[in-house]
Image 1 (tube, rainbow, N blue to C red):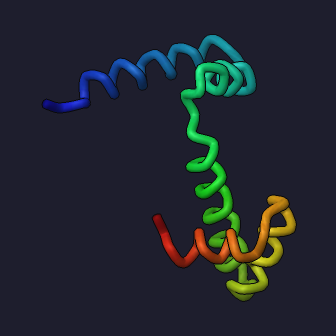
Image 2 (image 1 turned 30 degrees about the vertical axis):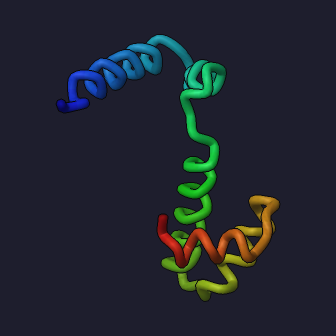
Amino acid sequence: MSNSPQIATIVSALAEEISSSSKISTLEYLHHPQLLDKRAIERRMIRREVDRLYESGMGRCDAMVLVADKMGCSYEKVRALIYQKN
C-alpha cells in the first residue's frame, strides 16, 4: 500500500497553509499538534551548518566546535551526528 496519496494530501494542505499565512505562523501551526520532529530538525540544522562551514574552508573539527557552541550543545553530540549520519 502506497503512502503517496497521503503525502500528496499533506503537501497540498501545507502548501495552502503556507500561501495563506506567514512562515512563522505556519511553523507555529505545525509545532502545536507535534507535527514537526524537533530532533530531526536539530540534526539537519547541525549537519547543514557543519557542512557549510567545512565547504567554506574551515576544518571539520573546528566547524563542529563552532556549531556546538552556536547550538548550545556538546561537541560530542555534534560529532556523533556528523559521523553517524543516521
